[in-house]
Length: 183
Image (cartoon, rainbow, N blue to C red; front, side):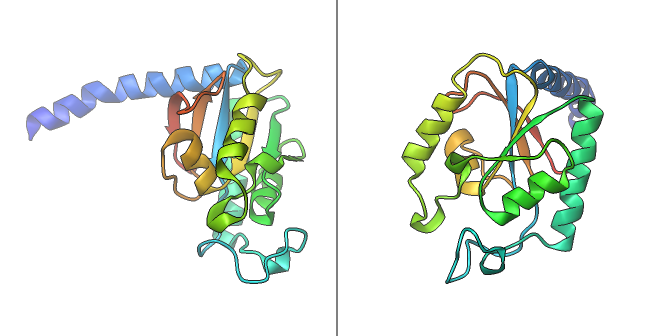
């Protein structure tokens, strides 16, 4: 057991350095942060879902709203200037993006959920790869999307509000520089 603890003590500085390097790469625009929307209890959307009507969708809980605000604070702590934010058109994603209090989010349909046949996962993922096929963005960038989109891109099944910092240009599978738990 002592060996395990010693190993963990030696590993922690390496993990911290990896995270620090990933954040620096993101600040330089050489990586993007992709996150699953914050807590919106349930799975999928109710029958009668209408994209333009939030009352027909699964929405953020109070905890999800607080989680989004904490994300905004974390990102402002990491970078003090404008951050580009793209979001799925689903209300829970747009609300997550807005509540972060960064620049107003730009709706990006390729980030829309394709759960339960609502979209085309392969073509949306390919379009996202093409959109971020550059080696650098003009400024740090955040994408707010859904579990299925996140998993298709990274192979990771994220928790609500979890994120990854992905190297540019995007590839499939994406090069994950760091996983970031919800603050």
